[in-house]
Image (cartoon, rainbow, N blue to C red; front, side):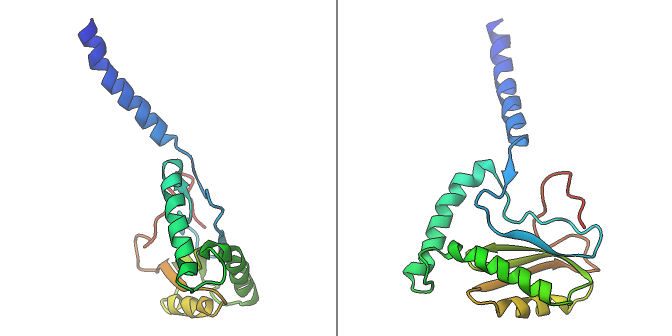
Length: 170
């Protein structure tokens, strides 16, 4: 009987771990700006953006402190942490898209982290990628623009997508 119980202990323990891991909460733990600016290509996969599983939250918090303050320590930021620019940059990005009729043939999401602007989604034309980078690089305090978009001929997006089945896209 003891042998049978020992034999069941490990599988039950692993089953409990797998159930916990599968039910792990994913969310934008640090409230990074993440928003959609265009919604015109149906079926475009929603990017993972700044969402993380709860198990990575503490490690990411430590990493963010190091990355955020290095900008100030290097004399590249006036603010003590590069992440403190993100909300202002996010508002500026929203305004840029609100003020331009360009990119009508796209579905795009924006994430702002540590003065980096990441644009992910789907585009209908190949020249949109370069135009996006140029448009957003002109925003004050933006350090880098990263554009990762799926073009019409691509089968998979070049960015991480939301891990849940609710990812229907727009």
